[in-house]
Length: 498
Image 1 (cartoon, one colour):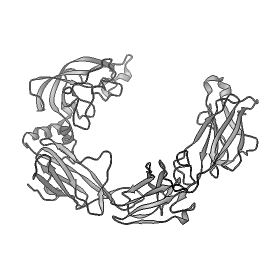
Image 2 (cartoon, rainbow, N blue to C red):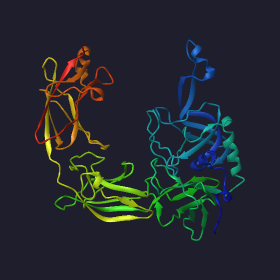
Image 3 (cartoon, helix red, strand yellow):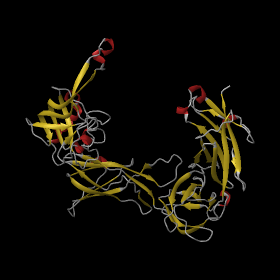
Image 4 (cartoon, one colour):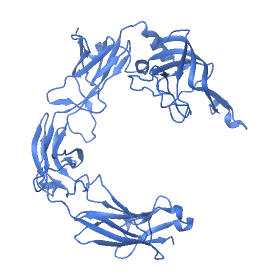
């Protein structure tokens, strides 16, 4: 059976406008029921507007049924029968999203089995702050503040929808949005993908297929019998479905239920190649960066495998260059200077990759220069009275322009206030020092600020040494310096406030 038509012609229900459909499709049991008891109760102060708690010498309290709650079913919509008694579990507090019930009140309850295919199923391991630990049980029913459960008097819209279900048996819908990121945009937002055909294959039954297309706004919705379906967007040859961890292509819909299935199309493009050393050996576990040539902004990156291979794919149309250690500062896994393909330290000499729709560049070889040499940075941190400032945190931070993912190198002074760090020759760093071990010092001695002496000049403006956010925590930054071929020595003096 084939069903063709626009979105407007295949609407199943108002799933696009209401949460009732979603709550129905996620639930295993739905009913209206009166609370007749519980295993546990919780009493708290009543801060509702009509309680006048603020005017009471002793605030009013309110008692809730929590944990294991017992209901008398007055009307059933799914999974139970009218007149029956049913037990529902929920959290008891402590941030577990439990729903608390009042004895004698009537509620519309949406509940799920403990082991459920629903994306919002609840586990018995989250039994709130109760000391009791429940053993897993597949058929145990749970509800929460996120399940759409509410007082029956506040569920008019839901009840209208649920009572209409019995009049429209075997009707379900799958709907969603399809968007595309084929072209580069600075806002990085997607845009609707119009006129994209979709196939809906009923799993296990060959020939039971349905079809529709997206509207001008990239939306679709199709009415079809309940069951399990494989949804297949049919994109043009130059595009492909973006593979994300949350992507799903198989969905199950209940009678008069619905599923929202969104898809994103990306440009069917790639840049692939191998990263090698100056000796021609593969470089593993290094990050190759894709940079937009117009905005000079990072777009994406790819790590090399054990053979030095890398793959950048789904690249929007535009002009790019590739680099290493432009966005990530040199580190032990990648001790190389900022370098651009094919063979330059200067971005002006980088090769431009012009990516069109469905265009790729494959099997390029990106050879890096020699590794950077490391050099020691040594120093001493002392108090103003000349005593060593032991256990003071000292760190250096790479400050090369465009380096966004900076990796700090951190150490702590020894008992004599001495520290040693290693940095790469040719890179520019800031040296920072913090003393945070205040628990062992008198309060007045802990209130210190740092200043720099010796062969380092105090910097005015944003780099000026200042007290940390709290007066008990000081920090200092030394003017950016370039690491040369000789060890650098610093002296940091911690002074008391004037």
